[in-house]
Amino acid sequence: MQTDTPLELALAELFANRGEEMPLWLNLRREIEGLGPDVRLEVRGRYVLFDRGGEEFAITEPAAHRHLEVGLHNPGFPFDARFREAFEFGSRRITHRVTLHETATIDDDLRARLRAAYFLAYAGEPR
Image 1 (cartoon, one colour):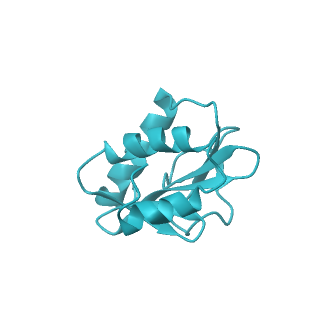
Image 2: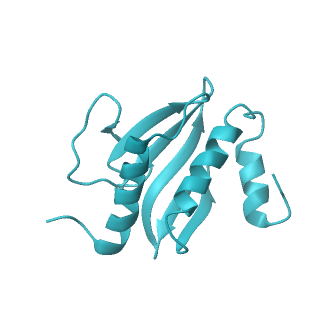
Image 3: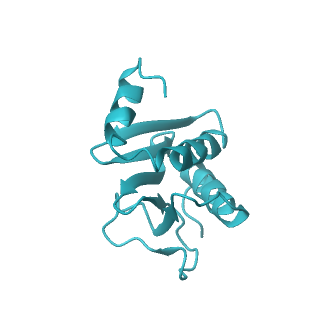
């Protein structure tokens, strides 16, 4: 990872001693940034926030036991065993939480949820 900008330095620090999660996180970052040119990311303490136009729509946090926790702004979407309710995870905008283990791939269900969160950040809450 290139570490010549303040953002990349903060990311390197966040993932220090968590090299196992880095390939998965980089794939997830690429997916999220690929949603549109207006995606912005920021390191906040122990997680990375993704926003669009100042509206947070996803967060990622490296966690113990070699996995990432991903929070999504998916109001109105059902909860299930995979996309759980996000109790006290990130900000109040984050409604769902999914755990990705280091060997996980980014599948179509997660892509759809990320895309929905991205569009909801711009369009507002569903009615």
